[in-house]
Length: 204
Image (cartoon, rainbow, N blue to C red; front, side, top):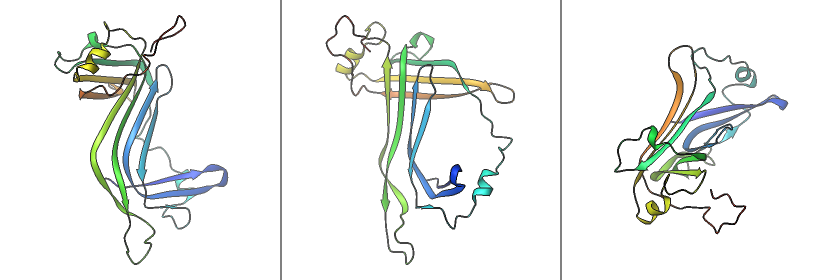
């Protein structure tokens, strides 16, 4: 239900843009191992203004980083764990060798328009339709049924559970910064990369 205003500057032209009344509908996290991870957010705004905004380019570009907001890079302390939903709790014995992971969480937002006497070109608060849908795509290093029995799980509609964890450096003092995704119940939707092999194929 949260509504935001999103302001950003276009440096070369010293211009300001403000997306008013943004309602976010989802995000995607994508990471290839040993490369920079990328977060992408999507949402709907009332409209974008450059004139008549409640702030200015000078105000926005002059902001100092608040003391309680700091950044820390993520390290290589990463794991991805997977087993059947009916198995014991996930632990280090369930670590899987993966090359990339993409996590997408999305809720459908529908824009609506109404006659409001003024500015009726602009939408009212978008409605949420349907359930929030979460999907995860993982590329394993190899096809190996002793490590992850994908075809048996898929054919049997086996429920799985998974966990992905990243950590980084400390901010100030204390524990490392970190984030963790946990999936208590999942089902395989599709398996790719299982075409007929040849001597030069790497079966991912």
